[in-house]
Image (tube, rainbow, N blue to C red; front, side):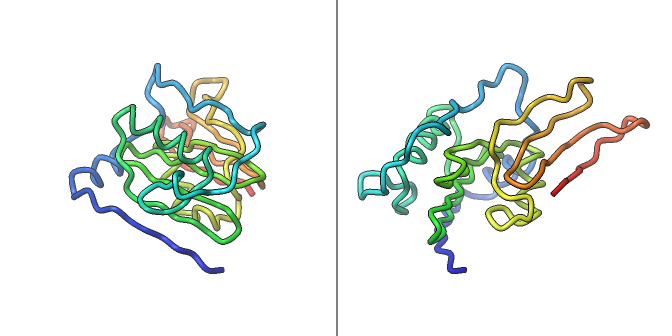
Length: 162
């Protein structure tokens, strides 16, 4: 699989901030659900970091930048799958099948460590949700889920189910 990636280096401060970011902060509003919209083909006007992207990805990137996040890297695959990573630890992920989805904080780091666009669990299909008992967060993906939750001893840990 061929990948074309462009990375913007914003310095150690931005990278450290991205690595230190946690899950969505209380009161943080999730990205709008755009899974029902059809994506327009990428045009020269719809570009992030010089990479042509579908208009959905460009809009989601603009929203993140309005919130103060800076683009760290853009990855585009021939299969029309896109990943835009931000300085706040969140990412915008897109495919024609899933639409634009956000993945944030610890869940984003776990998913990226599992392979990101190539992860066995697939791409995110919904926003993260707090677990009913308040012990952590989970997010649904194409072939499973990623969770960050507190165990019986009060220690947080990652769980990837695919």
